[in-house]
Image (tube, rainbow, N blue to C red; front, side):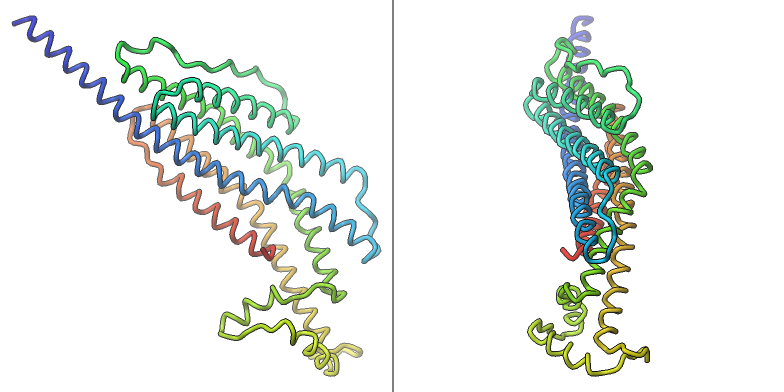
Length: 330
């Protein structure tokens, strides 16, 4: 009788262990999927900001002969090169975070230990490189990550423990990354504003000189109420407008000048909106990654992992990116 009770107890323990393992696998796979989605949208945001650096330099070089402004100073160009380095390091960290989540997914699917170990270690190295690019004080190096080889007597329990180990390692790198991203936002807030405003100044100068065709800007406003924008008619319409005095009544001004003034106001608004979006993109990205950290903690504590907040932030970043591109006329 006693032996039967012991056998039953052993079977019950096995069932509990199997249940933990079977529960951990789908939860970790869902966590990896949400993490990958957050990583992809964050990488898209970085690409938009990185592209603005080169456009800013070109805009300043164009403005010099058009408006009499001086060329960018060497100090400004050196700062921009530094920004490129930081953005490249941030992009690399995001790429390695994506690789780490792919490893976590593989570990959940078929216990791919080497893949997740490599992903986690590369992620830690990329976050350290990002810290170095930001000229932050050095910290103690992160120990190399390796999954324990003898966790539990049962394969399922061992896998559940390994999934928890991997989650902890990814989360710790993610927390370091988010802290650095918050610091970078404060450091480069004024610089990002200058980047956008510099590009906007060039666009407004082109419009004032008649070098920018406003068709792409005006067409959506016409189409909103069923009107068709005809680019071929634009030059003819301007010829007629030049013959009409300005609605402002200013001497020497005509209706074409009114059109250019209206375009300048729209461009000014778009520049201001893009400045706001630059900051909002970083804030929303940070919020999404912080929600991801909380999801990791829930998974590690064997609680229900609610990924809705992560996915909401992913959707918000995508919406901001769409608006950012629209403000840039993309």
